[in-house]
Amino acid sequence: QVQLVESGGGLVQPGGSLRLSCAASGDIFRVNAMGWYRQAPGKQRELVAEITSGDSLHYADSVKGRFTISRDYAESTVHLQMNNLKPEDTAVYYCHGEFSVDYGVGDEYWGQGTQVTVSS
Image (spheres, rainbow, N blue to C red):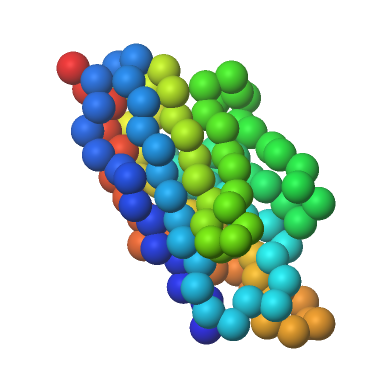
């Protein structure tokens, strides 16, 4: 199966930056989409950013201009560069991907999550 492993989370002060990385491994024939979701305490999980099979980029309105998603195809890795972080960005960030192992319909996979805390 496909595995997603995140890294790069941590504690940062408001206005600071973090770079999250997600490495995908397994028998991946096709990547339909990869992205990042986050879930804060007491809130539902929400989409932060994603990159589709056509390399289209989508961002939540709350992070536009501050976050940048990118993909390293050679290393099967997706990154989320987070700048000008705010306390409301505090959440567990999850890597998400839709992958196909053959010509069939893709399946969804989730990473284990990495904690991002923005606080003074």
